[in-house]
Each structure stands twice: as C-alpha cells, then as structure tokens.
Amino acid sequence: MDHFEKLRCAVKEGAIPENLAMVIHNFYLSYDEAIKENNYTIELIQPLLDQFLKLVINQLKNPYRFEPYHKHITKPFDYYHFGLDFIRPLVVFEKSTVRGIEHLNTIENTLANGDNVILLANHQTEPDPQAISLLLENSHKKLAQEMIFVAGHRVISDPLAVPFSIGRNLLCIYSKRHIETEPELKQEKLSHNQRTMKIMGQLLDEGGHCIYVAPSGGRDRMGSAGKIEIAPFDPQSIELFWLIAKQAKRKTHFHPLTLSTYNLLPPPSSVQKELGERRHAHCTPIHLSFSHAIDMEEYPGSDCIDKKERRQNRADYICNLVTKEYELLG
Image 1 (cartoon, rainbow, N blue to C red):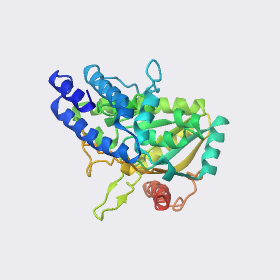
Image 2 (image 1 turned 180 degrees about the horizontal axis):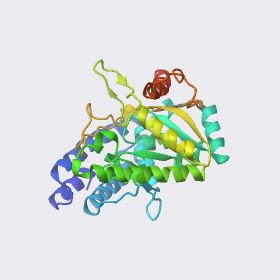
Image 3 (image 1 turned 180 degrees about the vertical axis):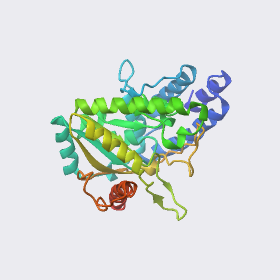
Image 4 (image 1 turned 120 degrees about the vertical axis):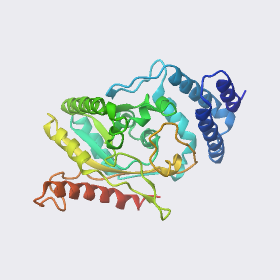
C-alpha cells in the first residue's frame, strides 16, 4: 500500500478530514516529483511519508500543546532528525552555499564563551529551521541542533507543521498580525507573549544561546513584478529584543542572517489566517549568509532626535543589509 492509498484509508476511517487530505495529496504529488530530480526513489522515502501521516493523524487526535519555551524532542522519537531527513531529499547540496563562514565561526566562539547571539533574519519557507540545520549539520553540528527559533502561532497549531516544530527549540509567540484575530482571546495572547519574552530574558541571563528571529513577522513573498521581496523588518520587534538583551546578565551580539530558501516550499501569495495552506515542494539549492555583528546603538540615522524615526532607521538599516546580501546569493 503506497502513501496515497494510506491517505485514502485515513479519510475513510475518519482520521483525516477531506479538505486536509487534499492538501496532503497535492503535497505528495509535488514531493514525489521533486525527490526524483534529486535521484531519490519513492521506495527510499516511503518510511518518511508513512511516519509523516502517522504524526499528522496523531496531532489531529491528540493535539500537542506547546509551552512558551519548547525544547526539541528527540526521545523516544527523534523529531529533530525526522525533520531533517524529510527535507533532505529536496535540497541540491552540491549547488547550495553558506557565505560568511568567518562570521559563523565568530558566532560559535561567542556562544562557547557564554555570550548570546540573536540572528535578525528574513524568513522564506516553513522548513527554514530544517534548511539552516541541513547546511550546518556537518560543520557546526551543535549550533544546528541547539539554535532557538522564535515561532509564530501557525507552525505550532497547523497539524501539517507541528511534527516538524516539535523537533525544534522554540520561543512561541503570537505575531502582531494574529493578535487581533479572535478579539476575545487578545488579552490571553498578549499574556502568553509576555511569558515568552520573560523566558527569553532568562535564557539570555544564562548565556550561550543563539536565537533566530524574523523581525518581519512573516515570510518573504513574490512581488507583483515576479521577484521575491524581502519583507520589511518591524522596528518595534527589533527594539523589543534589543531591550530584553540589554537587561540580560550576559552580553548579546546581534548578527544579520540572510536566507534564500523560497523554492523549497513557497508560501501562499498572500497571508492566510486559516490553517491548512497549500504546500508545493521543489527540488532546489538553498543558501545562507551570516554577516558581521552590528552595533545596535550606532548606525545610519541613529543620531535622529525622534525616537520612532530612530528605531525605523535601525530596522531599515538591518533589513537593507539582509536585502543586499540576498541579491548576492544564488
């Protein structure tokens, strides 16, 4: 019985609703074609697809509840390596690149010395955490596995994303664009975010942590001209992380990180509030670029008198660094 037949059986048994089954079916079609381009056979990855379906069914039956700070689960089931192994067949490694190795080594040394690093990055595709780890697993294995990701509500609630999210270290927040949905839950969401930020402060007090955050609050998308556009960075988001970092007992260093991973699993053309978005996998090279640490107090426009404008200048400056680096990637 292949993965399509197992999916049909799951629908007949009532384990998966038809609308979600259609999303999985279409994803299977694209995944099957994509891995063939990378010389993987269906027989080789069949166990991964079977395991994925089991995890989705289990999530629908017994939803996993994420705490504000979720630590990756590797026992008794290794969700971390499952996520890597699932995305691995889509990546053309011989054409993928990591730029800024010297900055990456600096980051590793910074962490080893007990300081923290916050990566201010763009975000392009759902499996960005797996993409980062796949390109770092051979050269910077510890960083690849221990990096903490600031995660929005969707990846910890969508049953197709949860099996991969469980395998990552996450600081779970509600992004600004989702705070206002379900107004009756707004205060609860704000309280949740406050707890998450408090825990982040405690982590920075401990030292030795690397945290990835996308200040845009969402993924980059294709613009009207048919070109992928880096989503603008939110100055308030950057200011929040900067303020928490300044209050920590250990020093925190801020590095821009640029990702070019869009083609792995392109996002919908517009932001979707409902779960169960379309997923279409591709076989593709992916690219990362680590940049030098930036001064969060001295930057172009930092001498502006207006506080709001000063913060906007900083956000634009960092976003421009990422955008310029993105243009150099494959």
